[in-house]
Length: 435
Image (cartoon, rainbow, N blue to C red; front, side, top):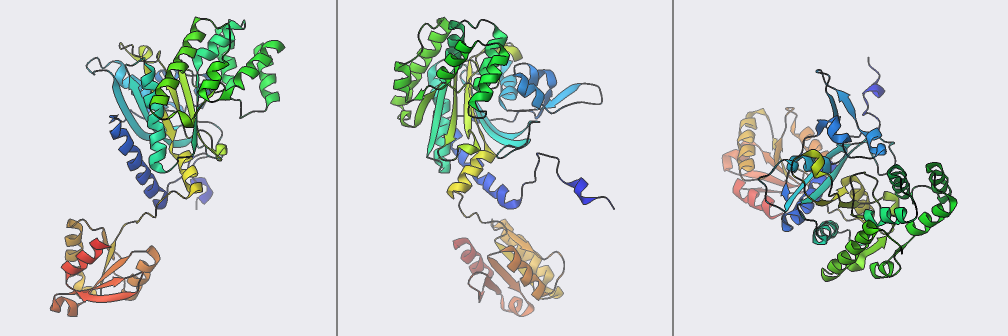
């Protein structure tokens, strides 16, 4: 006999039980409600991409995390690590779509990284993207969408941390860091602030080739975090044109968020850079206050250069995505999930084999009326059927016997109250629907 341990899910993967799936479906409905209010249309990009598509614009850390394989024809393929790449590839050659293009998806991803708390190798995200607008209104739209999704789920005590990759790159160049490779390596290390100790970050910056004076300046820059007006008032001096553009974008974004009434939950945090290589403008991350060990519960930013990589249509773009598992952890801690009734609502019990045909007819009649119904598939005696319904938590039982059929009634048993009443099937249906 095969060792049962060998049939466990692979490391970093897990099964989703009915209770969790019910919560996820409830969350997806709440998320879709907000997406619809904002005018986004739902899509589903393919889960399997050409490996070259996934590697076209990512950092080395992401490249190392791609689940990839060769198919029978020797083609190198990979499982998507996010939804942005696939959605961008979808629209990059669609010259017929009017701008701005606003699409969203809720689906699964795979990343071959080290499993840890709130982080799995197979996970789910919601993702919304806006293509065709270079304006900060689009960035504000993405941020507000994320905030409204959290609000609709009840997660209202969150902080949105915002920065700009142009500002960070401009700052590094203005301090004498010219090498593109060193700038990208430094940005990846800034992204790890909060995950590694100050000493570890400092040592890694040294290994990149930064001098001690520049390391100190980088650490001071990344430590700037406050309300937008205060950060803008103490912004770095001597920036190049790109850095100044980043600062102007942050200034305009703050004005828009203020007009939209969202500035109170936003801070400008210059350690926010986002680790994925395609970001090139406004970037942001949202954290549940008091639950930062979970990590960012949504994040995103601008990636104006990605479309041109995947097709003929060169469009500016911005977007936002949130991890379902992380959001669920925050919601569980806060007790925000409602009590979700699991099907079935009713179990139809046959007193004996002679009335089973009538039970099938009643079951089908109830299902046609929109009531979730189950009946015994094991031909058990009545006592065993009642024991089964007790164990599953079915709220109502309809008992069918020959005497009841002769009188044109059924017995409706309320399993919570332990009460039982004879009534017509129509009255039983009305009682169940009112519950």
